[in-house]
Image (tube, rainbow, N blue to C red):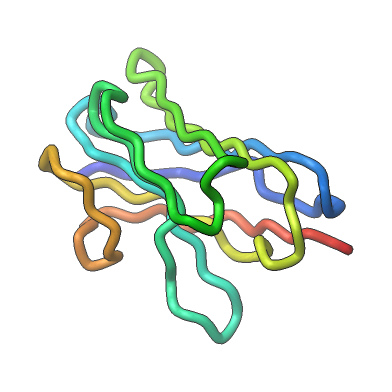
Length: 124
């Protein structure tokens, strides 16, 4: 069972950028289709971005498209999410998720493996 560890969250000012990292442990990241989700207080967990095993496929939620980039470095067992033009609506706990399989999936139920999350707070 893969383990996922997120890092890179924190407090940032609106308009600034942030890079989140996700490390896979126990199993190599190249085996997994991976994604980022986020959950704000009182809201459901929502899809942010996903990337296939060899980075051929990337997919973004409309809310972050054009100002976000999901990448991965399988040789380092790492995945990243870079977000720019942050606004207070981006404030949430961001989760890294992984699944076996090669098709794009955007529902939390599609991903059996999750990290503990990293808090991102965007101040106005």
